[in-house]
Image (cartoon, rainbow, N blue to C red):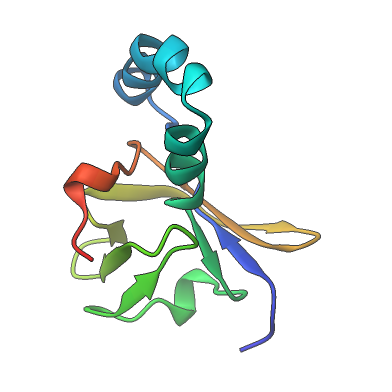
Length: 107
């Protein structure tokens, strides 16, 4: 595995975006919560979809745990990866269909 950052960006669907929009003012007013939300979508390392093993656990920059499920596509916690392996200069991005929220994570 090479170094870098895996970014799992929030919200590629309308339902997830509406959650963010409803909390927009709250998140902008509370920089700590905003930072935790963003860091809950970032994992150290340069992991492609082929590196994501079923049942593996990834620790986010926020210190929370993400669980990988590859039994039917790729799921990260309750979110489905809809756009895997988007290469960025500092890592790999995996687009997901829902926002990963700290209250839905173990760890």
